[in-house]
Length: 179
Image (cartoon, rainbow, N blue to C red):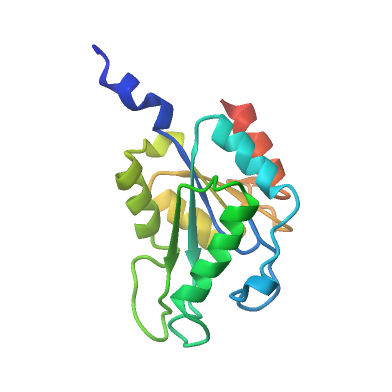
């Protein structure tokens, strides 16, 4: 009881996850039909490893197709339900930003950090113990704005100041090797 940190220490950390290209296959256009929503190999096992290591798992995804009228929030939620089912309900929160700059301004939309800040507040997280895993520089920028370290995944140009991995499996290995 002397150290207030110990009360929340087991849940003071989280992994913020971009969705398309990290958890599910990027198909070159908006992914909103559950039939097109293909979870990438290694994702359920990686999420289970991170969960076992004491991390909250929080999805943060831009979904501009909603603002553009291409699909609805309900369709996004149907994809998220499929993701949760495939991953044994490992995800603690799924945030999405429905806005698009051509339609409306939104602080939720990455590279802004409001989705991450909402997760930090909701789960009383220590940003220094958190990570964001994404496949775009805007994911890294959102993490940096919230004080969260990032790992850029995919076939990316080498950025000397960023940690990088091929996929979520590689990013998981980096994170768990880091602790």
